[in-house]
Length: 296
Image (cartoon, rainbow, N blue to C red; front, side, top):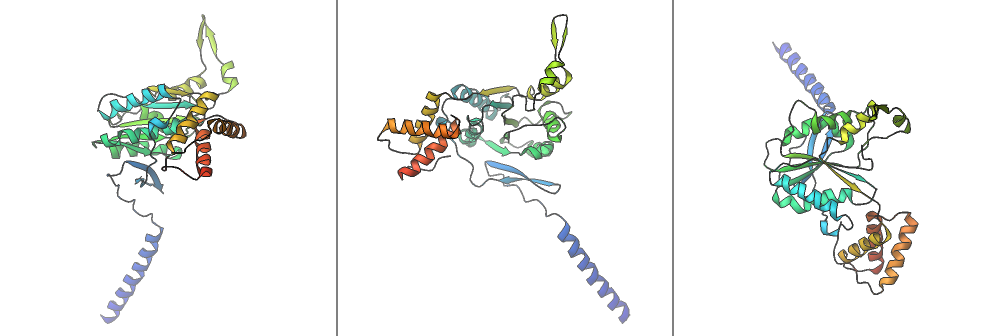
C-alpha cells in the first residue's frame, strides 16, 4: 500500500506538470465584451475573436467636414433612419483619398451615440468573421455599424466572399440592428483591367459585360447607398483650411499670409485634400503656439 500511494502521488505530480505545459500552449480565453462602450475593434487571437472596447474613440464633428455637404446629408439621413429602427441601407463611400470618407463615418458615432449607435471597426483580414460578429450583436437593443476602412480585394480573397454573404447572399438574414459602412478608393472594391473590357460582347445592339466584370460589380451593388468623393479644387481646399484653423482656435492676423502658406503646403504635398488641409492646420497651429482645444 505505501508503495502504491507513492506511485499515485508521483503520477499526479507528473500529470499536473504535463497539464501546466499544455495550458501554456493553449490560447487564453477571449475577454468579456464591455457592452457599455460606444466603439469597438474586432480582435483575433488564434481561432478566438472578441470585441475590444475603444477607450478613447476618435471624436469628429460633422460640422468640421467641409466641401462634402451632399454626402453628409445623405449618410446622416441613412444613419438617422437606422438608429430610429426604420429601414436603412449599407453604405459604400468611394473616391479620392483624403476627402473625408473615413472621417464622415466616424462623425456618425459622434452624432448618434447618445441615441444608441455603436461603431465596430473590422479589418479586411477579419472579414471572414463577419457572421460570428453579427451573431453576437443580434437581439441587442443598440444599433451597430460595422466599419470596414480602405477596402480593396482580389476575387480569391476569403473576406470578399464573406462580405458578399453578409450583405446579401447568405441563407441567414442579417440582423436588423447591424449595417456595414465601407470606404474604398475603388468604386467596385476590386482592380479593373483593360483586357476585361475587350471581352464585352455586343448582341443585337445590347452590351453584355464579361463574367469577370459582372463578378466585380456584384459586390459593390450589394451596398444600397453609394457616396462618391471627388478631389477638391483650390477654393474648397482653402475653405477646409479655414475650418480647421477656426476649430483649433488660432487667431489669424494675416489671412493672405495664411492662404499663401496653405497653398505652398499643398504644392509640397502634391495634393489638395481634406487630410492635407488638416495636416497644414496642425502645423500652423503648432508654430503659432496657441490653440483652443484638441480636435480630431
